[in-house]
Length: 225
Image 1 (cartoon, one colour):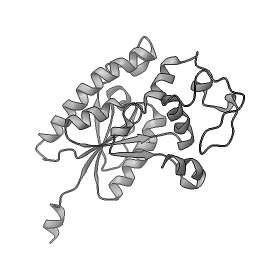
Image 2 (cartoon, rainbow, N blue to C red; image 1 turned 180 degrees about the vertical axis):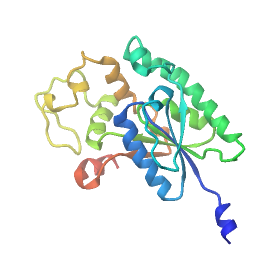
Image 3 (tube, helix red, strand yellow; image 1 turned 90 degrees about the horizontal axis):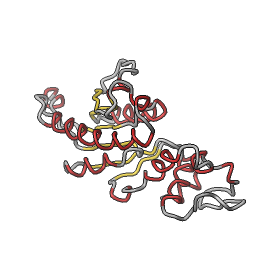
Image 4 (cartoon, rainbow, N blue to C red; image 1 turned 90 degrees about the vertical axis):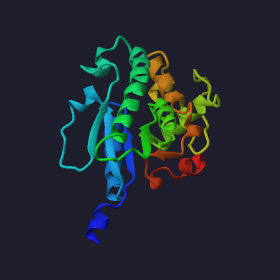
């Protein structure tokens, strides 16, 4: 009986994080919860980001892909826009290579699902190419993503012109209370585009996951559901 239990099939989930600590931490915590439920988890980040991680005692495997700037990440890119475009190109290719490596490994533990950071929508295209389940993971609160969603759909026009902004599930807010990348478009336009583009293919994802607590924002969670 013990031998059968040890050989029992375990679903294998690849958890792909955007390479900043504020994204890696919530995805690592989510990975721990998946592992607690009996799922085999492989956490994936960029090669440059992996050099800053102190591997703690955990059975969660760590793998890396390239963002095209292996020696220093975004700090070595000419601009945020250049970094994101290069990451899209190289990241898609090296993620596919990683999936092929895991499928052909001696351990014989191919990936069943990719949980990917919403900042990396191209990961869903890779997942579908390999016939895998794709789940998007939003690392910020539902309230913030509700705002970005309405911008993406053209329901909230930029630049902001209204004195008071009314969005479903949220109380009335002033323009200066909005996320800085929405309120101040001039500072980091490439980041604004990335935040809004999180929803470019979200309707094709098999699951949509949010890093939130229901008790903290019940109205907006009900609205998105």
